[in-house]
Image (cartoon, rainbow, N blue to C red; front, side):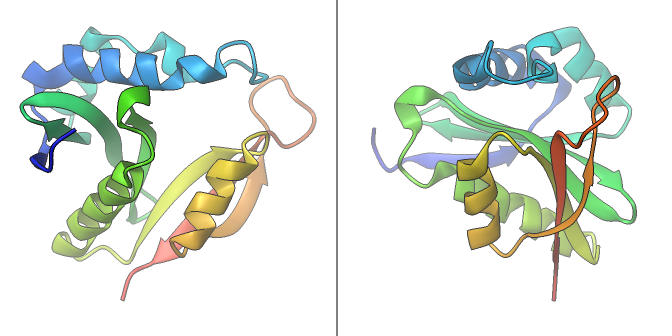
Length: 159
């Protein structure tokens, strides 16, 4: 992989490649998360609708090919990110951190006070990554139909 990495705001035309990137990145979790990740229900049409309604996305391109992405939306006065996705072949190069930094830069550009995310309790490595970047747990919640927490909500205040 070369050094020609470009991070850019996605457009509705990017919806098919965003859906494909999310599916490929989350495949490692298929059958391992309870409940199953909602990432497997993402479609190009649904992503295009979200983008048209004001949600955002950032795509990472390496030599013109999308290798990662992240979805964003306003939530509780902050910028929330989800579906942080890096293709397996592009992992280990710090791309997730670069995508998160781009989300934080977007939040700062919008003069928002913080960035939020949700992470599964069953994914301690992901929790550790977010903690290393300054995110702290704010609450836990249960997915519908569960009587115990399945997800951790995290927030990073921006200065």
